[in-house]
Length: 283
Length: 225
Image 1: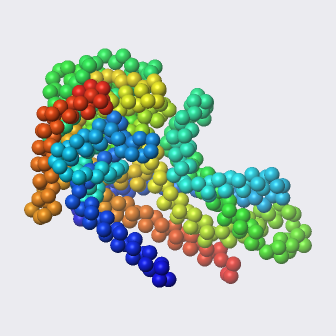
Image 2 (image 1 turned 60 degrees about the vertical axis):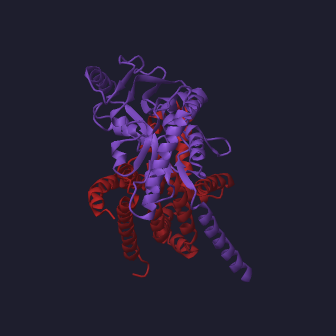
């Protein structure tokens, strides 16, 4: 019985020690399931553009960081519950999210696109190469009208709680039959199985999947930016406040902004973007 | 605590409860048929039939429901042969995939519940029937099955409640059941505690109804009347 008690005490004590050691490190949350932004290698280590960028930013801030994994649908709630201090998970800066959290300046931007399997009736849709929803204009209107017609009656799949879901539910392309998934992997699986007629995500998420799986996934229609698609991807941080933690969060925001500036000037962000995306997605 | 959100999300969650109840009732209905069938097969003296029935219940009771639903939904969807067969009409729909997974799962548990109920029937009751000249078939349908169902009521009530909670996994295959809609509301409001409390309350209320219904049946068909 004595040994039993001792073991429990030791375990409890070690928990407290670990808690203290980690307290002054910056914890950064990422999804680990959205390549090439962030993903995991075969042995479960977090890899990808944002994981490397986070390490660079922390080196510039001269602060020790820990990168932790968090499911996408619980990302913002977990930040608010202080499970970590910052989000770097391909999260676009949108007005809707800014009601709840705050963002650093953007570090990278990347267009969204629809994807289908080869042979779909949507291939060869007559739309401009890319549309910026913030700009508006007759071209954008015409493209949205074409898309409304093309997507009518189709099952469009996307990841839950993303800018892509917001766009599909915004009414810009009529009332679409949207199906949402927990991860992008699942969207890709159901696109190949044929349960989804069309899918919407970051264009690189599809090209990356097509490359790795060899499946005949092709991008169709225009690439999207602006409007519901937000203003680039930034570091998500809790809104500052007057208490000690609030002040720490406000300082963290400043530090991240400075570090992003430095990294951009040194060309670190461009270099990492080219390495992971195949083109310069930095901003 | 955002009480406004709790009030505004309640009607949406209640609407989603209809999907949950549909999934539950469909899988319980088909599951009971499968369960009864396999319970009878388990009592068969033929070793192959017996082992086959045991294998089914072992497989579905021995693996997590989440794994089963993933294999049926994402796994079968990857097999090209199935995708070009007539079965794809059913397997294409997340709704039917969920019902198939839930049915097979509850069917396995139900078969075990009914089998043990059959085995607890006292031989004297059957012998009494035989000595009255009642045929084996009628003994089975009019004596054994009713007694077995009554015997298994408490355990089966538990199974209904477990299955009701199990339907929350339907949200993992894109279905907008109670849990699915709760997650959807959270994805736009970022307030999990409020929404899950309301959803949890609705689950609790359903458990309350099921529990009391089973209790009522137990009393109504009690042996000591």
